[in-house]
Image 1 (cartoon, rainbow, N blue to C red):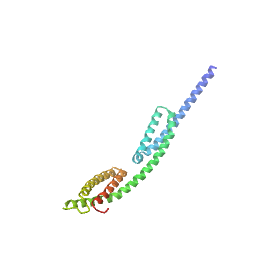
Image 2: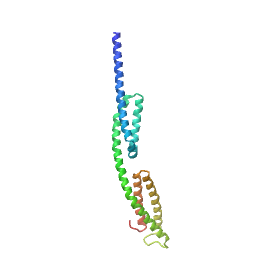
Image 3: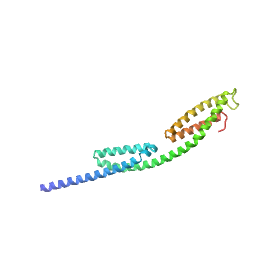
Length: 194
């Protein structure tokens, strides 16, 4: 009787070890597979979807930590959600690339137009500054406002150019739109056509 209990205990222990070994292999394979996918997306992820990429990377680090602690159940339970997050990251990267390309195109167009607008306004301000009187359609307040607006435009344009140089075309295009809108106000204040 004792011998059969001993055999049953040994059989149960063998099954338990085999089960743990199987879970370890599955957990290790799952984490390794996801880690490879995430590593392959690192460059695009950090550039086009940094927040989503950091979230996936953080979750992966948590699962790797659980794997190191031999908590295979937690790893296997968390793997499906992480796989979903990786798929969402792929979508976010694709969307980020589209926005990046659209912003780059918009910036290229504005980088030709806006400096010409700034130059035209600067020329008009210089001309009016050197004249003895302002035209009838331009008040002193409007002229002063236009000069201040021109300085704002120049500063914002410098920020936009720096953003584009830093690889942030979305921010650059947003600032360029602000300069263009301010330019329309300044042109109106100076009695000029857009």
